Amino acid sequence: MDLPPNTQLSSLLEDIAGAGKSYSQHELGARERLLSLAYSLAAAVELPSETIQRIGWAEPARFASTKIGVDLNLFEILKDKKDAGITTAELAKVSNADPALISMTLPALPSTASQPT
Image (cartoon, rainbow, N blue to C red; front, top):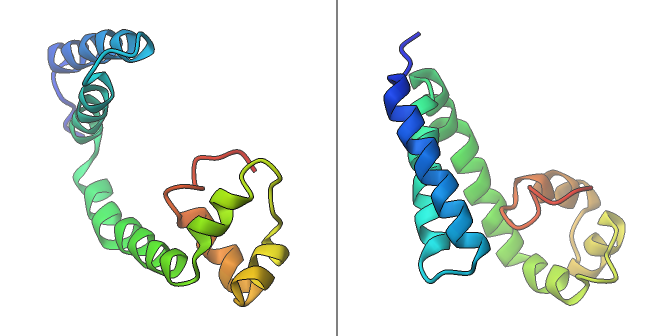
């Protein structure tokens, strides 16, 4: 397994730490810099087989789920219910969708995938 040189990773991690500090201080452009560095870090440590899996499986699934979310107006519904919350069954009813479709779609949506369940 080919790993990036420790100096490259160390430099990236130092840059991320600095960008994280800037982000926490609400500095202009810090979020974009931090995001760019995070992508660079992922690219530096991702194995070729992981890249193939991500491009071939995860990204198309995310795109398809996002399209379903847009088509069913899920983002607007979720935004309106943000503080109250909504169950999968309620979301299916409000969006006139099958509950199984909603259950399979939500985990892949960018706006919900990293949220605690």
